[in-house]
Image 1 (cartoon, rainbow over the protein chains, first blue to last red):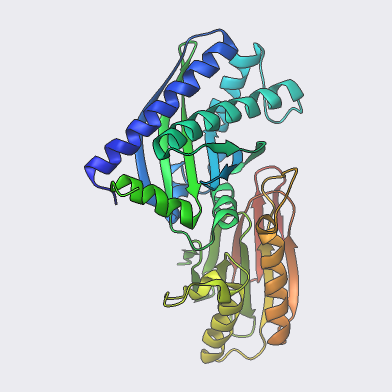
Image 2 (image 1 turned 120 degrees about the vertical axis):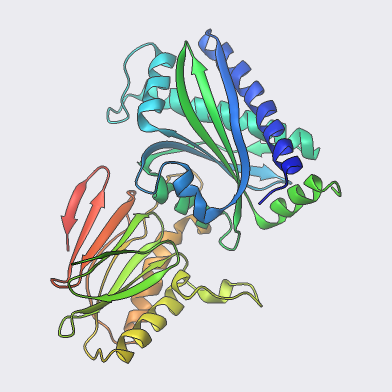
Length: 199
Length: 161
């Protein structure tokens, strides 16, 4: 859907965001954190459930609303096992989403906050406009249900989302995370204009 | 051989027994089934939005996407096959995330379910059973031969309507 140049540009944005996120997480954990971007794409929304492991894949997600000149939502998705492992590393004890461990849940939401803040900053810097993020909300459920809910909440008539695949390495443990950015119609237009050099 | 027909977001399909109709990962969307037990005939739509009037002008409307156009299309298609006594079942319309400050757009699941109830009323089709709302995603499968709707969720398990 995107040219090679546009893909590289988005990937670079993803890299900058990942750099910010890794630094912040590393400071929070007092452990080395490395995040790499394996791919960045702009894709039709209907492809998204398959990109995150199929509509019925059990995932952990954090959703944050964006505010400012760029509007939309950022959704962070991990396979449940990977998210639990990451939170366990964070709080230094075993964690499961089935428990109602508040320390674990708030650590998880903090990961979402840090990550989306980092990507929003990278995007905002590139577009030269500050992007604010609102309080996070969590859902642990089927990937299809989560993506669908976000898509309909943001902008029902919109057909594309920005999609960044990342690999996390915390304390030698590897997990795969997905970052979805769903801009509203006007915001998507602005990003595309900037991509084409007219912004 | 019985087939399981898969219905994606905003799609709809029609079939006869012994086949089944299935849609996976319903969030705020609603899966609605209209069926005629005498003919062993059924159709399912994966409805995404309550009202087709919000679609942009000059855009080809995907009929399965909106509650109003989906019900109209299903009724029309089933009647063309000779259906006379239609009944309905539906599931979905969840609120997947709980925010402190909710805007109207986030209540879309509830609005989808209500729009379908209204459209069924207009066509005088009885809604035999429904499982809507809550905070869980659902995968549903309708067995045309028995008219049983199986609903699977990650946290609550499977139930039948």
